[in-house]
Length: 397
Image 1 (cartoon, rainbow, N blue to C red):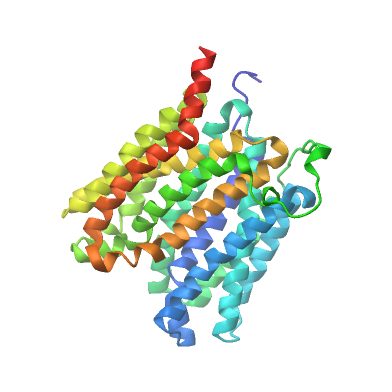
Image 2: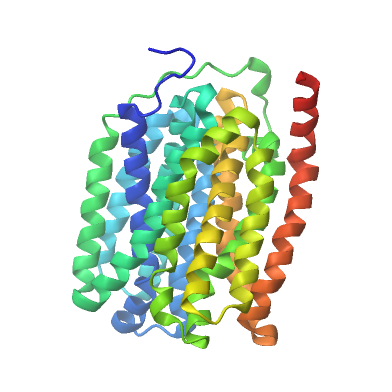
């Protein structure tokens, strides 16, 4: 074994990434089908159907907030297994028709269990990745989410056209069972116990949020909010511009761009630091949004998808790696939870907030403004982390 280049693709890394892929795949598969299901099967109104969709993210936020504090008390592997068991159970509950309130409650609980299981998976993989290859390893691990965000909606929309909702739920249940089964084979090394001074009585915000991860989490929140405009409104924009056929390939191009770039960007972060990835990524992400704001062609739409993948996709994995690297091992669970809370908040609340703006300015102007917002977030990144990393690098010279 080469000590200077310790192995990354271990059995535990691959299994944990596979579990994460299935979790995110189920999330997005249901995300694009559950609103129509609520309308057709329960007679839900448009606003109720929207709540059925969105309440899942609120549940995920609640699950991450709770589990971030308790994951090391329960045990990281135990948390993963329990979370997956409950995730699978709540997936089964979709077969039960006890009215719309029960469906909403189950969506919230399903979100909570996803928050538990995915936070545990992210914490475990951050622990088992060698320190020298943190950026590269987390970059590869986050590909499991990226691929799921591309294939989940595609599979969901295809199944909604050619099969029943019972079949959709059956596929999700089967994937949940497989995830639970393979998680049993993950080995998680013991974590060094935290210093006794960390154990204090009474309420402390640091029991739920990792303070060292908050600055980079704020950056993540801002870029996730900007990206939520793409995730939620790209189809509406495509309909307005008569680009619906090209839009069906948008997230596939997005995923391919990340797949091609991730091996280089992860390694670059490990060798040169996060700044070498983040600053170009800000510019590329902004360029993708600017292109969206002016394009009226299929080619322009797909090029914008590739640019957004190169930009936001690599910023997402880099900010997660920064959050983990800044944190001592015994608080890695809290750091992972803090990162995902910021990501979920940006993706979850972004569409709601931007929805007030769209009727006033339209989609094209929205993407142009958000392009400038991404560039402004580069300044926030410099103040929150980039300046400190630059100073530390200069001190080593």
